[in-house]
Length: 374
Ligand code: NAI
Ligand code: MG
Image 1 (cartoon, protein in one colour):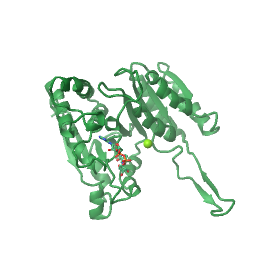
Image 2 (cartoon, helix red, strand yellow):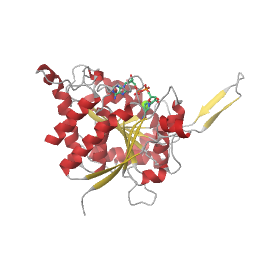
Image 3 (cartoon, helix red, strand yellow):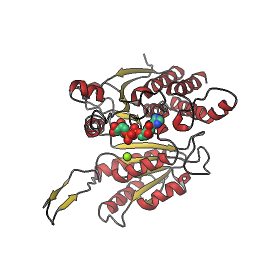
Image 4 (cartoon, protein in one colour):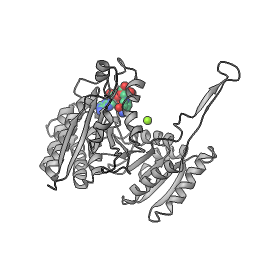
């Protein structure tokens, strides 16, 4: 049997993670049916605060071997700050997945969708369409450093940035590959070599070195401060933007923020080099950017698009390009057609965060049915 089959670890987590997961799974099923592949969902209730309150830990002891039986991890959101401190829930689950599976690339699309109003005026749908690529394992977020002379006048704190050649090269190379795969073939590197005078010139040096392998990709670099300004002032000029852990963190929030509501933004944590056949296979993780949103949890009004779009990225990762393209088009068509539909007396499918009166269920069904009926 040569039918393409993918096993997915389904971890809804907490709050709206539990609500946006079912519509996303239905959309993935619809894509599988239409494009002729099989999805096997393995449902896990752990990596949630409910599990923690019951068992005193976020994960079962064999979590790693369980996840290694899967081709990818599809993750909702974790967090229930009223009952479990965030550092316990987040560090005990999601951050362990990212670290222990060495998911060294964090990638987010920044795409202005039809029907979604951007905080930037005068931008047409599709005119903003780029990816941020963040180094996800080292850099500024290192635990090397310390505190000395605490509580005295000489109190001193130091925290060191760690750039390894392996760590820098692999994320930069991933970004070049992504740029090469896109029509614009352009890479922007975030730096600050005028102020951070040792590590950032090193980053620039590695980008310049690796650029030699990609003569077909146009390369530019900007200091992080002016780059942030450019994201707002001319977002249409970017294609793939790569940054260190800290700069990438900032850009990967700013980019999607320029294209509208947090409820639609997806994200992937990738280990692009690990292979399923490796003995030490390390799966990648796909999730919405948003958290568990306790303020709206249980009301059935969470926007499911972030979760569905994360599923779209997962299909792309599997190499199911046609299915991924169709799912993105279905999302665009539903969002883009929503206002006209209401004017014609039809049902409002947009959730309240997008100015509508729709529900998680209704918006999810609308995308699923456009995808199925094409
Ligand atoms: P949040 O993203 O959960 O919510 C921020 C605001 O955006 C809230 O007003 C919420 O109602 C709104 N929002 C978020 N997603 C939405 C959606 N799909 N549709 C409509 N509105 C949406 O961030 P917050 O409030 O800072 O954190 C809440 C909990 O989530 C905390 O425990 C935090 O640690 C956790 N968290 C988990 C993340 C993850 O699992 N990757 C990421 C961010 C936060
Ligand atoms: Mg962030």
